[in-house]
Each structure stands twice: as structure tokens, then as C-alpha cells.
Image (cartoon, rainbow, N blue to C red):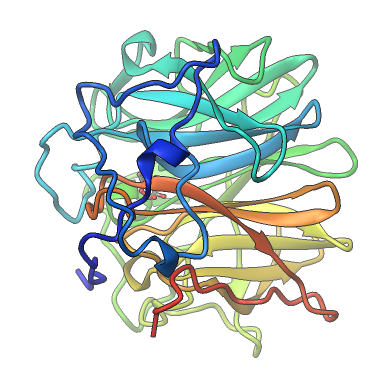
Length: 368
Ligand code: FUB
């Protein structure tokens, strides 16, 4: 693995950054996390500070519901599972939802919103979730390995954006792999984008059929593509067979696996800006967040470039929202722990150029 160097002692001032729970009280670190250091040395190396520091959080999917920002992150825990290329060390057990009135405001941790023990079909590893609101109900979408150790995507519902959520008894029929994100188009249709290679198992799925021996592509082969499916009116099932999404270079060609600084790896997100569809994702083993634009939610999308350079840690995962006329990028790094599986979510402003391209962001000021 081509890992980034994690510089020591660059840790946040935890006292200044701790979150409040629903009753407005500060929560201490919990037993499954190591105490978070309060050494502020090197804080100014980062363009943003962790949104909370009493728990480890990652993969922030942000949404504006009822004029408040809700963040649906993974909840990283130190379970001692050894690190490997399948991501077994990302062994998460529950979700906590965070919220705030505005970027820069006080962050509330709403406590456990869904626990793996309450998902009847789940085996292990609650990875990056997302949420949507429709028909008066909030939907939490989440990937978790089933009892056969195959990643599937589940859905849970709540009357409130912060939960608690109640999981359906089965995964979404026809779903697979990881990192679901749900996008509502202007005409009221909802689409789920998903997929991730390596530990996300997308290489095991061809034509929506599972092959446990499915291999990663070789350098000269066409890269594996992310997936999309329109959601049914009940928001709990796919309205159509899952399709591949084509991401093209400027000459109109699909990327090859060797283009691993641009090809899809995981962490899809969709947003619309000035009538264009922006499909963004992580390049995984090259650690970029990149984007491609198109004229339909199904693509094809034309690659436009990197908008977040690699952060500290191995993974890079994000969401993009508009609030009060400004655009924001939610992302994570490992500032608090220095450990790749104990991440912390952050936010920074995202800016567009006149031509609709996104201004690239360096999350550390000293990044080369
Ligand atoms: O958090 C576990 C996995 O790491 C996510 O599903 C990926 O996107 C990566 O961030």
C-alpha cells in the first residue's frame, strides 16, 4: 500500500473541540477509544479542525434538513483488528449522527442512532452511511457485511433526522458493495450511487452477479465502474436493475486500472451545481478526491480533476452541500489519532471557478 506519512504530535486542542450531547453536556471519550490527546502542537498545519474529538468519526455524509446541517458519519473504533488491504481494521459497530446550525456552530452528537446488534442480517463492519428524507420519513442507508461476509446495503428509518433508526429485516434486494449515497434530483427522483473496490468487494460483481473469486483488474484493463440504481417510491428498494456509471477522460475513453490517480475506487457523492451533475469519488490507493461532470444522473461523466489532495491517513471520503449560499466540503483525516482507522470529520468551504470547475483544496498547509 502506498501510504501517506503521518506526522506525529499534530493533534487538536480537544477541550476546545469536544461536542455536546442532546442535553448539552460534554461527553468524555468512551471505552473503545483511546483518550484523545490535548496537545495542540501543529494544529495550524491544518486548514480545518476536527468537528468533534470525543469520538472518532469518518466518511461524513452531510445534508441540510429543516435548515440544520446533519452529518451521517462512520463511527471509528479501536477494536484491535489487524490492518490489511481488505480494511478489516475498519471494524465499526454503530453510528452517531452529528448536527449543527451552521458551519462554525456548536456540534451536537445525538448518541447511538443505529447499532450493528439491531440489524438482523448484519455480520460485521458498519461502513460509510448516507441519509435521505422522503414521504415524511428519514432514511439511513448503510453498508455492512452480511453473515456470509458479503457487503450489502441496508436501510433503516426514523421520524427524526438524528434517529434512532430502525433497520429493515433484510438488505436492499439486489444491493452489494459499499458506500451508498442517495441523491434527490430536481424532479423528485432519488438515485443511489454505490460501490468500492478492494475491501469494498466491487470486483466480485459483474453484471450484478456475485463471484467470490472476482479479481481486481490488471493495469491495461478497463477500470471497474461505480454503480447506480433509481430508488422506488418506498425508498427501500431499487426501481430498476443496477447499472454501471461511465467516467470518461477528455478524449471520451474509459479509464484503465493503471490510471489509478483518476479511476473510481470508492466514496461516491453526487451534487448538482448550475444544472450540471457532479459525480465525485475517491481514487483510493492514490488518495485523491476527484470529480467528473455530466448532463444526466446516469452519466456519462467527464473527468474534471482533483478537488481534495490526499489527507493524512489512507482513506479520503467526503460530501458536498450548499448552506446559506455557500458550498462546503465535509471530509476526514487522522489528525487526532495518527492512525488510519481512527479518523475525525472536518469541514471547509468549497469554491467554484466561473467555468464551473472546483478550486482544488490542500487540507494541510505543508503538503507538497
Ligand atoms: O470507513 C470505511 C471505509 O473507508 C469507507 O467505506 C470507505 O469509503 C473508506 O473511507
